[in-house]
Structure formats: C-alpha cells, structure tokens
Image (cartoon, rainbow, N blue to C red; front, side):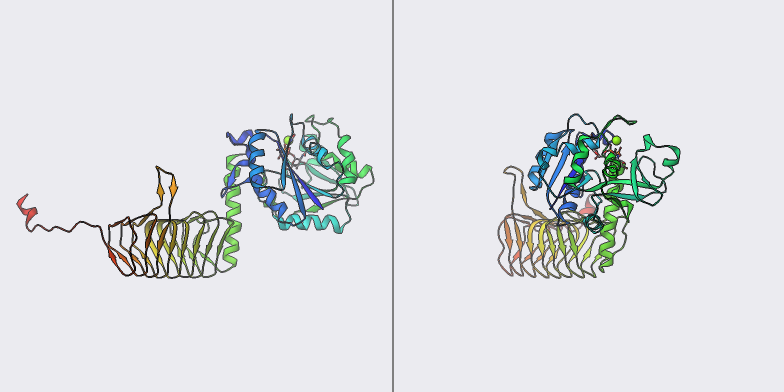
Length: 425
Ligand code: UD1
Ligand code: MG
C-alpha cells in the first residue's frame, strides 16, 4: 500500500491573503484538494497526511469536511521540508509500504503522472525515487547532481550550489517516492548545516546513496505539472493552464470552442461532441451537456446543469441546478435556477425563475412541461409548475401553477389614446 505526505505548512506570504495558501481555489476546488485528488485517483493510495502550520485549524477543518482519507499534521515551528515530513512519523512508524511526498501548492500535477512515477519506482526496484524536470532556466530549484555513470548522487539547493552545479538544468520537482522502512532512518539523521539552516528533505538522496539504497530519478514530461503557486499572479496563471488543458480535452473530443482564450470550463463538466461553445462563456461546477447544443456567447452555467441534445443557451443567460430537455431554447437575458424544463420549450428574453425567498432563505423549484412557451420578461415565482403546452404572455408574473395548454397572462390591458401626443405638443 501507498500513503502520501503533502507539504503545506508554508506561510504563503506572497499571496497577501487572509486565506491559507493551499485553500485558494481554481474552479471552486482548493489547491490542496487538487493534489489530494490526484493522489487518490492513482488508485494506489489509502491515506494522505497533510502537513500544516500556518492557519492550521482552517486547513484541518477543510480537510476533515472534504477528504475522509486525509489527516492533517501540525508542524510548528517550520524548520524545513525534511522536518515537515518527520512530523508524520508518529503515524507511520510501523508502516511498511511506499510513501510519496508532494507539495500542497502544485495543483496541476496529474494522477497519470503520479501513477507513471510510482510504476517507474516499482519497475526499477528503486528504494528512493525523486521526480526531476529539465528547465532552461533552473533558478531557485534544487539541482539534481549525477555521477559520471549517470546515477543520481545528490540534490543541491540553489543557495548551496557552486557555479558549476548552478549550471545543471535538471532540477528537483519536489515529488518523491520512498520505500518507507528503508528510508525512515534518514529522518533522524538530517542536519541543518546548510545555507538556510533548515532540515532539507533533499538530503535523503545523499543519505540513500551512502546507505546503499537504490536511488533513481524519474523525469517529468510536462513541466507545467509542477507549477507551484506563491502569488495571485501564479494562481491566475495556473487557472489558465488548467483551463487550457480542459479546453484541449473537449476540442479533441469534438466539441467546437470558438475562442479557447475566453472560454472557461470546469474540470467536472461533460460535453458531447458537436456542441458549440461561443466566446466568453463561463462554466463552473459539475454539468452535463448533450450534443448539438449552442452555449453562449456570454453564458454562465453554475453547476448542476444537465442539458439534453439541441439545447440553446444564449447570451447573458445564467443557469444553475437545472435540467433542460432537448430542443429547448433560452436565448437571451435569462436566469434559470432550480428548474426542470421539458423539451421544445421556448424561454423568452428576460425570463427569470424567482427561486429564492430572501426572508426564509429557502430555494424553490420551477417545473416547466414540454412545449411550453414563456413570453419575454416573465417572472416565474417558485415553487411553481407550468404544465405541458401552456403559454405565458410576455411580462407576466406567475405565482400559481398553470394547467396544460392554458394561456396565463398578468399584463394590464393596453390602452391606446389616439392623437394624445399632438394634443400635448
Ligand atoms: C524545495 C526543494 C527543492 C525543489 C523545490 C521544488 C528542499 C530543501 N528543497 O525547495 O530542491 O527544487 O522544493 O519546488 O526541499 N514546507 C513545509 N514546512 C517547512 C518548509 C516547507 O511544509 O518547514 C512546505 C512548503 O509549504 C511547500 C513545500 O514544503 O509546500 C516546499 O517548500 P519550499 O520552501 O517552497 O521549498 P523550496 O525552497 O522551493
Ligand atoms: Mg524554502
């Protein structure tokens, strides 16, 4: 079995935020959440330890509520990455399996890469594998030092490196896989005799070599995966990178996305081929979109949205927790929330499902049958049902259920006074 240790005790000063760094989000999911899920999705891990320091209570509460197989461990004070890992020792003293170590602020790591990394570790019968990456500009990373035979002999931090070592472009990606029983003793032998006066996790490489362990490096294929977040600029960049990855997946699956640069699609959204997403569309949460739909421009799907085939969601339309059957259109300026909408329905411009009662703070449901036509600028005050085939006249406020095939209209009669304007000139 495999367990992970996720380092997340750093302060994240450069985020300039009251929120702990790893609780910042991309598409409503936290940075540490991405890392835990990447580990869990390998199918190898049964338990994750998240090392926390700064605002530990908040991170602990979040982890408890969201990830039942993760446990937070406090590191205070923070004396370095090696010290951080040793905080988990009391929980894994007897553990005889693999430990992978990662950072909580690298949300772009994928479970595919982690799987390949662990398989590499197993196939090479390694005791200690470090993930490396090749960077043209390796500044700030620890450098991977190899012997003349190409064996990994040590990791040297930038601050401790000679100019010759600084020229090395192969760096430590900060992800490790250890055969725990064999590497555990290293943690009681780490020293702080380095430029930063910290217990360096990276020193386990040298330790492994002096203790005749099989030490190897797996080289990361896509450097983007270890993009670490230290500032709001990094957070915005990582969001873009993740979004690009998602857009590419949909394009490869046959979805037409007119402008990948202004379209945002959350990781949990499924879209069938031949649907077209127009520019400036923002799709968050978990949604399922059928084929031949047209979404946007300027549409906002907020999660819990299920669209059957041939549905049109046009400009300035917001949809949340709503199921819409095939060939239904909501083309302009509309809010549809907590609704069930049939097929061949036309939702006129400016239609609002009034789903929220601000006094009771309750949300209620709107049910619209097949073939219903809702006139423009209508308000459907939930809970309300509009049965099959009914028509709602423009500018109506619907406060009770409308039976099938009826016309419902609340508009005051139109008055026309001939010649009125001329009389008032
Ligand atoms: C570390 C590596 C470096 C590697 C780089 C990859 C060491 C000594 N160096 O450097 O070789 O190239 O990561 O990104 O490990 N943390 C704690 N407790 C601590 C210190 C750090 O939990 O006491 C956490 C931080 O929150 C962060 C992670 O460990 O998530 C890495 O720490 P950081 O200070 O960013 O490491 P680097 O100096 O970048
Ligand atoms: Mg550091």
